[in-house]
Image (tube, rainbow, N blue to C red; front, top):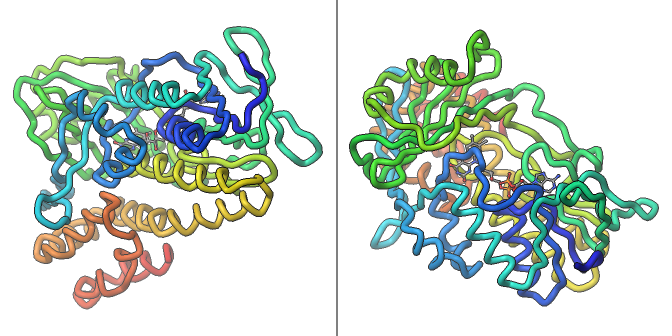
Length: 409
Ligand SMILES: Cc1cc2nc3c(=O)[nH]c(=O)nc-3n(C[C@H](O)[C@H](O)[C@H](O)COP(=O)(O)OP(=O)(O)OC[C@H]3O[C@@H](n4cnc5c(N)ncnc54)[C@H](O)[C@@H]3O)c2cc1C
């Protein structure tokens, strides 16, 4: 077992495995450290948006994914609190693009094994506890490997260890989002009927519920709620049932559903890293910051971020400037997406505004298609930030929307 490599990647989720694959293919010695053993569960909606598809193809794993028979997801059915329904498909020429739904224990294992096959030295059961420094530069990590402390050294350490990243914490760059404090409860079920090929989003008065069909009557259900609205007087199973009662349409679909896995509760969800690169390190995926699962773009950001990280690291000598360029590229790629996410969150937590926007999009098919293109990562996010997109709503006099757009721009 080698203790030095060109690059250390901490975390074997989509961001870490994808980064490791790309770097190993570029001829670098890569060591991937993962605290769990695969296959492992990851609380998630299990949805891979259409933007992920070309990224998975470039990684060389799309055919492996398709061999697992994932459920194609062809669009979204979105129901606003007062019942306005939007049926959105993804924009494309000819056959509309689609995403996939596949349990994360399968998807993440597939990627991690692909990294191993690409020549990455993979360590499971290896939890990174601390960083090694030479002056101001990060030169490696200390990990607990099956109860034994071990040091690993490299020219670059990549933190891909998800929300609540140990690497970002050790760098003193981590913080929870001060005001967006959501908690998610997620579980997969077997229901009596097949639920088709649309993801379903139910916007409620105090959060939202997402159904993600997985084929053969299997479905992933997630309820997201503000931390302050959690009914804390009961066990989590009871809390989940109580939260689901706010979505009678979902209750009907569930019927006598049989749970397929343990209920997972995660929160707070939103966190950020003050910087995504510095002397000897960079952060990718959720470790670089996460906001909210509503638009289902987390895996896309992890895979796209991996491409940016690999590009920065492969460009020869890893100077501070090269890592700085990664930070700039990262911001350029994701800043508008982040603003769109925050804008949509501001809209969905205002039920009346949400209804107005829903009715507006019902009447403007081209705008709904554009929204789907942006959240599906097929169109650039800044298209939803141009005033023209919201113009007719603004003309209709929804002043709070004007304020919201201004505050996220
Ligand atoms: C409730 C919920 C639902 C979501 N639904 C969706 C969805 O449907 N679609 C979507 O695209 N996104 C969704 N997301 C977001 C998505 O899950 C993440 O954005 C995505 O998993 C990020 O990938 P990652 O590789 O950065 O992090 P992760 O997937 O979290 O992977 C991090 C890895 O690092 C490992 N690790 C952590 N700490 C250490 C350590 N100290 N040492 C070694 N290893 C470590 C972990 O075990 C894990 O394997 C959802 C998120 C939540 C919370």
